[in-house]
Length: 212
Image 1 (cartoon, rainbow, N blue to C red):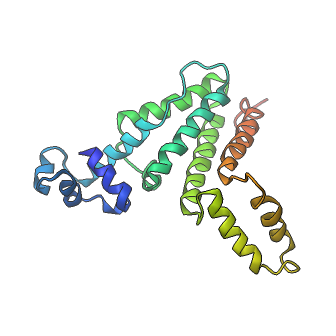
Image 2 (cartoon, rainbow, N blue to C red):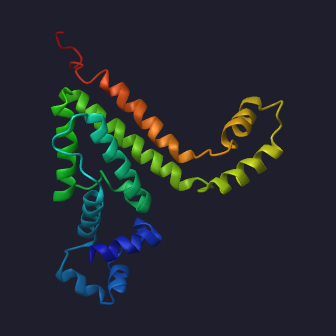
Image 3 (cartoon, rainbow, N blue to C red):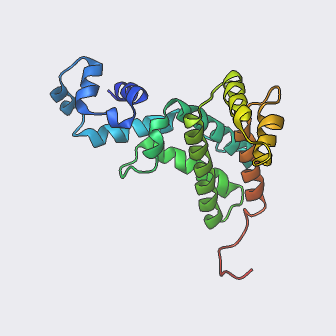
C-alpha cells in the first residue's frame, strides 16, 4: 500500500495521496484500506518513513565524519530528487516511523562521536539538511536539466541581455554557464564541502555563555 502511495505522489505530488487514489492504484475499493490504516495521516507517516529508509545511513564507525555525512547527503539528494514531493513532509510528521528515528539517531551519532558538542550537532543537522532540501527544491524547479538545455536557455538569455547594463550577469553566463563541460549539478558537492569544512572548525565550540 505504501509503495502505491509513493507511486501516486511521484506522479501527482503529495496532494494526490488520498485514500481513493491509493485504492485505485491498488485496484481495490477505498474502504478496504481502512482495514490496514486508520486514515490518510497514517499513510503519510508511512511514506515518509519509506523515504528515510531509502537514504543511506552513515556508518556507526567512521574515520572521517565528513566522509560519512557527505555520503549521506549525496544519498539524500538522490532519493529526494526522485521523490521531491516528500520535502515538505520530511520533518513535519508527529508520529515518525522506525526508519526515520534510526536515521536521525545515526546522523547525530556520527556528529557526537566526532566530538561535536550537543548544540553544534544540532546546528550541523539543521544546516546540512536545509542545504540538501533547498538544493533539491531548486534543482527540481530549474528550467534546464541537461547540458544541452543549459546551452539553449542560457544562450537565448545571453542574446537578449543588454551587456552594458548587466555586465556581471553577462559575464557569468558567457564565461561560466556556457563554457564547455559546465554542469550545474556539481555545485552541490562544492557547497556541501564548504559547509562541512566550516563545521569542522566549530565542532568543539562550547554552548553560548559557557566558561571556556
